[in-house]
Length: 144
Image (cartoon, rainbow, N blue to C red; front, side, top):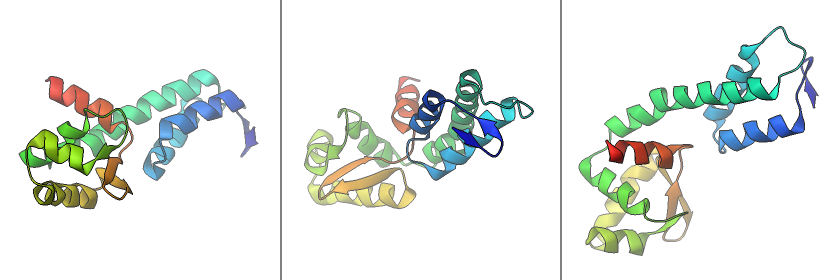
């Protein structure tokens, strides 16, 4: 693949796309960071991509995930912790049951976390983490 005068392998591009996780902000970070590793080079190497992803991930954690974490209430963290038990998306009924609360009570936290952009609605009664890297970040925070 070639763009703006620089080449990049398809495998490297796939790695970058996977790291982005659908986030426009992460797309900007990864693209900027991998481009900046060796700006004079004709090709963005796989090593450049890997280093760019690492730098972008650190920046995402510091600028977005940590700030978001600091703004969460205890109830928000408990709700998100209940979601962590699922490998993928989480059903609201399961979250409420894990928390030992009513569906209406759990829905208040769902609403707050949707508005904050931490989670997203996947289908009726099903939510998932919205921020790329959130699950891994939260695992680290809960282990502290």
